Structures are given as structure tokens and as C-alpha cells.
Length: 140
Image 1 (cartoon, rainbow, N blue to C red):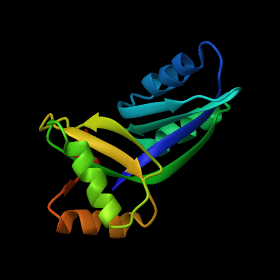
Image 2 (cartoon, rainbow, N blue to C red; image 1 turned 180 degrees about the vertical axis):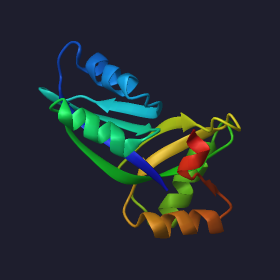
Image 3 (cartoon, one colour; image 1 turned 90 degrees about the horizontal axis):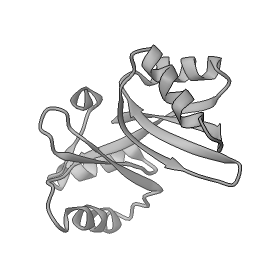
């Protein structure tokens, strides 16, 4: 399982730069990310090298943050592989709330990062179906 940092921040010029400068100051690497915007606030979801230190540092700067478990599945960079993964999840009766792309620093292969309910059960089911579920150590 992976740990994801979510940062809820005002949707204004310079906010993302400020967030990344705090992470830089604490030598935290962003391994995968996505940003959802809203009218006034957005959510920045990131898999980072040290989610707890990142959350603490950003909270000290006034940001509202949380750390949640997410799943990372390594897939070959080939047409249709994301669709195959999503079909497998549908067959398992799993809802995906959101997903985004990262990659394995060692193998160079894409990793689909996603949030769902029952993470432990979903990970086990995916392993049984032949998918490689990524551990945090593979991301660095």
C-alpha cells in the first residue's frame, strides 16, 4: 500500500509553488500527483517520499492536510492496460474514486495510483489476479 498526502489549498496564484517549496525545504520528493480545482479551493493529492513529515511541515505553514492509504498497481505501458485494470476492478465490484499516474523509479514502468474502499482486500484480489501491487519502497 502507498500513503498519499492530500493538501487542501486556496485556488490562487503561487499556492502550488509555495507547497512545493515547503516540500523542497524538507527534502521531500513528489513521486506522483494530481490537482483537482474548485471555485475557491483545490485538492493536491501526492505520493511523496515522507508523507508524515510533509503533512507536518505543510500544516505548520497553515495548510489543511491528510494522509490516506491508496493502492499503486504497476502496469506495462501498452494500449489497453488501464482499461484491463479497470475491468478487473469492475469484476471485483470495486469503485475507484480517483486515479492518477506515477512510475516505478527502479523499473521505469507506469504505476496507476488510486483510492477505493477496502484497500487490503482489493490489493489481495489484484495480486491473486496477477497484478503487481506496489509497496512504498518501490516508489523511491
